[in-house]
Image (cartoon, rainbow, N blue to C red; front, side):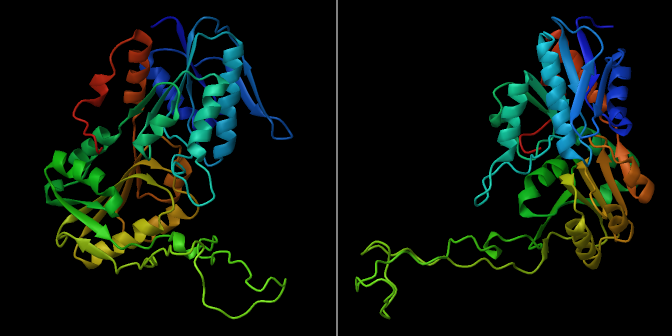
Length: 366
C-alpha cells in the first residue's frame, strides 16, 4: 500500500461512486472518509472525516446527468481539502464536462475555459482526464493535465468481441472525425470510410444581426424623413464581398461498406439521432452489421429507446460516465472498464514516475 496519499469520491449518488470503488480496489487502498450531500435548499455540503494535512489527495469525480451538481460537488470538495492543508489536490475527471463548449460561438462564451479557472481557484493542482473533446482544451488550464486515451481498450474489444472483425471497415460519422477513425483503421489494419453531409445545426439558421445593413446617415437632416436611395456602404469606397450561403450536400459515404461490418468511432455519444441516421445510410449501402464505439456514453434523453429501435447492432462505451440505467433499457449497450489505466495513472503520479508508458502506441490524432 502506498503512503502519503488519499483517494476521495466527490459524488453524492451511489451510482457515481462505482468507478471510484473499482479504482481503489486496484490500488489496494480504501476510499477516503467523507460525506457529500445536498441540503434541503439544494446547496452542496462536504464534510471530510479524516486528516489530510500535508498529503496528496486524488478526487475521483464521475459526471452524471446532473452535470452542474457534480461540478459544484467537485469544487466544494477541492476547496474543503485546500482549507484542510492538503499538499496537492489532483482531480480524476474521466469525462470532463462542458468540453464541447471550447470554442467561441456567436455571442456565447468559452465555458470550458471558465470551468478550468474555477477548478484552479478551488485548489486543484493537477487533472487526470480521458479523451478530451478537443486536445487544445489543455491550454485552458494553469496546471498540468494528463489526457489519457481509451482507444487501446476499445481496440481490444473490437479484436476480441467482434467476430470476423477483419471484414470490418472503420467509419467516420463526419469529416471532423476522420483523423480519429484513421488512427483506429491504421492500428487494426482495416479500411476507412467517411460520411459527409449529415444534418447539422447551421450557424446561418440563427439570426444574430450579422446581416443587418450598415448604419447610413440621413442625408436630409430632418429626423424621421428618409428619401428612397440606393443602399450605401458604411465606408465610402469599401464594399465587402457577399458571402455564399452554406448548403448541406446530400449524405454520401466515401468508401465501400458493402458486405462489411461498419464500426463508427467517436469520442462522445449523447444525442443519438445522428448515429441512428448514419446507421440507416450504412445499411442501405450494404453494411450487414453496425457497431458504435465511443469513450463517453452520455446517452441522454430517449437514446436507449432510439438505439434499441435502430439498425445499430451494438453500442460500446467505457465506464467514464455511469449508464447502468440505460443498459437496463437497451441490451445493445455494452461497457468497457477503464479503471485499470486510471488507477495506474494515480500510482505513477504519486510515485513520481513517468506517464509515457500510458501513451505508448498512441498517435497524435487519437
